[in-house]
Length: 337
Image 1: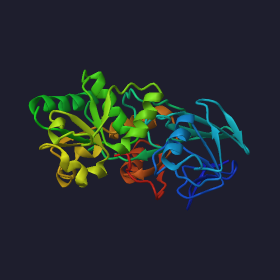
Image 2: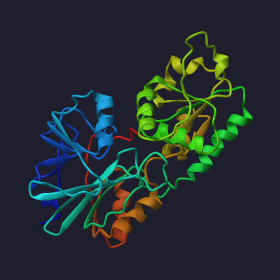
Image 3: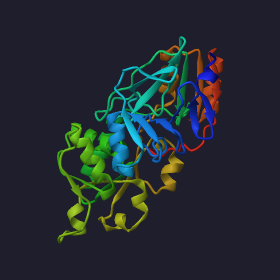
């Protein structure tokens, strides 16, 4: 069987005819295998969904218990027969419950990575290299300009600013699933034990992470209820989704230091456009060196590149004698960044 017969693109996303399923489909389908809980990969309305327990839980938190007609829990590393193929789920290191999905038949293995990162993350399982014939890689930061700094150094930069400006609140924009919890946990590991204030949009997911054994310490709502005043947030770290920083919520804090945790903060113009005073280059995706190293480590003889800067990574593969092509999938955004 040729790789394009085992998996190919359709308007709904990647499709496996021999198994009768889609991977991370962008519209409702009969059977969906989901890599992780970010909304551009995990959508409601499928008849049947297979994913890790954590991803299914996260989908229920975001969409309600009836987000799919039926669900099936994927056990990491366990092969499951679907139609005429075997599938298995392997850690992707992106967010809690995130996976790569391996599809195999007749000695051919294709691994769909979903979104992944190689940096250590105290809130999720680390990425597992899965040898394969074809590796489907994301390319969110698939340009040589993207080389992420040490994550601990970015957290140290935030804490240094808190010490330097004790009278100001530090507002940190971080996506609600994965990034916010990672920032909080890294702050704890760096010795910051004061209460951290969070926007209401983060509460349920932070509670879920804590219930899964991720110690986030003392979290308090970032509200002015019950007699609180703006001065009560002086010297505090406040974390909220990036969208909240454009509304009235952000204006309640005393002379805030605007921060944003994202791999895109490597681009200074992006930081300036968002009015970010303290950019924190923290990404839940691989940088250029990590993407190319991962491709080599899989041993894949062919690479399919999707949602991101596809052309540069395709060209790198070709220069290194690896067959490669872009998939040109639509419907996947940089939601987590």
